[in-house]
Image (tube, rainbow, N blue to C red; front, top):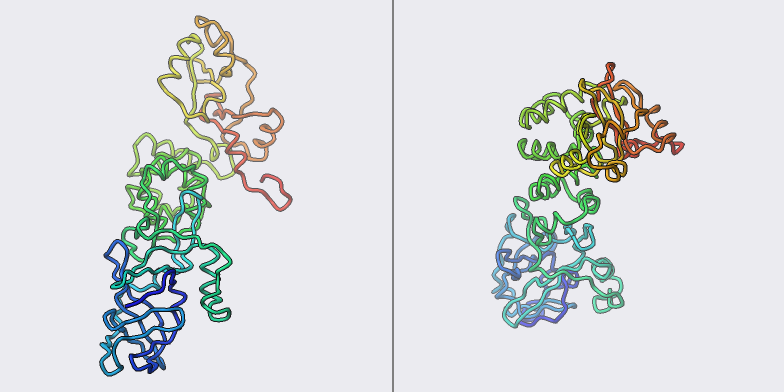
Length: 412
């Protein structure tokens, strides 16, 4: 058997198949490969003639070239076989998507490169670049030897690809969960939004719940719902527990009451109780936007004691814009900035350094007024209180920035 170097699948498809005596038997329609090997070996060619498709096995083939395929047997001796439905063919690889973590994007298989060693032919790489497209779609017009020659191929070796679990006909780079975890959630979200439903599910099953939660928050709401519904209920509940409360509430509110209850029942009791309470607030109010994860300290605590407490809590950065001060009944008394806390004498009480005039809203306040307060006072966070003045939550500037924009470009 002979095989030209740098031979691509696109250069074989449509080429005539000739028997040993030069008789034309049909055209190459597909290539059957053995998928279990590290570099899948060519098992045969699917040849079509007048709508009849048959497989010619590899031992009958003598030459693969860009102009024709030659057999080493005459037509009567060709070992034709029916094309099996479960046969793994190159047409099942073309146009599949590959997760490229280096570029934080999804690329598409445009062509497949073959190589031979005199006895066998193997898939050695896939072309995900423009050259593959040119080669594949313009080969018939420009000639196989010229198509794509002026564009450098963008090849990915087959041995760094792997089928996604449970979806064998889809490809992905061999990426460890550790590498995925190191990607920025926004970059991961870009990848997620270009994957199929099944691929998204497989990806989220690999991710650490915290990474999955951060990534889920960055994709469109309809995609969030689709991903959550596709996951095992316990896995989905684990991810919801790691999401910011306001983001989890937004997502749960998009689900049916039955689905929402199922997930909440699988979550930590305290976290689920907080989310159930937030879900009671009317959409578009401060209560629906706030989180109950905030930092509040008693007036009698010293600055040193508060700093030590912060070390123990290691709070998320979103919640340390301001430190809120409450009285013995939990009512909002004042606010202390981190700078004020750090530069004050360690033994001084925070009730002595706090600012008593605090901008706050009730849970029923509308988004429009909340937005005005953030803009007017250049706030990073806004406390939410009940009718008795008790601190019940905060709204961060991120929540305001994420509000939808109307046709005039204004936050709604």
